[in-house]
Image (tube, rainbow, N blue to C red; front, side, top):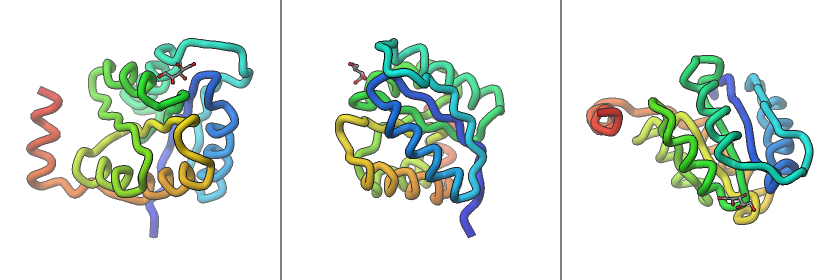
Length: 146
Ligand code: RB5
């Protein structure tokens, strides 16, 4: 049985539609969704949204986060500046599974201009259904945290 998570979602203007599609998709699976927007396609700044979602994770208001921008790269960089966040950009399901199993990534970033909707949903499923393996990987994750 897949563990249900509390998941915070955020994006910039480039990924509103995909973010809302993901929110509906994972809510239908029984995950608890905290979608912190934005809701309009007005141009905005991805660091604000990546860091806002990251703050929800480090505050314990969400277990995991999913963030999106055009490439997934800028918003990932912003989220990773928040202490305690380990966020990876994924464009394939193998990486999405591995960042949970080996890196204990507490955030996933997606590029709405990179992956189509079907692949994005598969990536999200791979990420949310994988679990951290601990052991030697925990030693390495602790080294990231310093
Ligand atoms: C916005 O045009 C774009 O730069 C942003 O969504 C993202 O791709 C940045 O990394």
